[in-house]
Length: 143
Figure 1 (cartoon, rainbow, N blue to C red):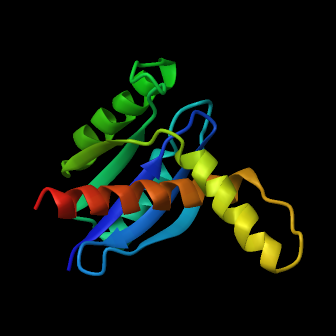
Figure 2: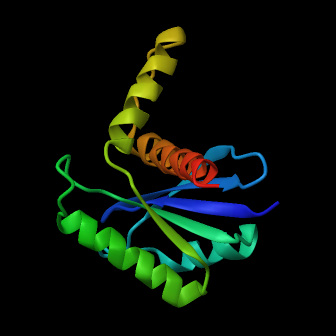
């Protein structure tokens, strides 16, 4: 069983999810606040030490027509930096609309209980879990 850490990269905050390749269950874990629009490398290093992942997954946002944006370039740069710092395999996956899906899931789950306000940290963590779920599904399809 090997652990996987997924990132929903953002310039202000990066959502993190943890999963493993045996159960293929992704769990929202935390949000890392950026420091002067740079990833919080100390906290990422701590996550890598704690979870000892065999794989890192980074969601890369593309426009609906498949074209790149500034965030696409920033997420790809982040994935290259992860690879350079930690020498771990990096997978990138199109994370188009993962934050919107996360928000919808949270709203749906809130309809059953109290109407608690949804915050951006919850969305970012869940978006990272959705990215990891999608990666697990693609991996299974491709054998």
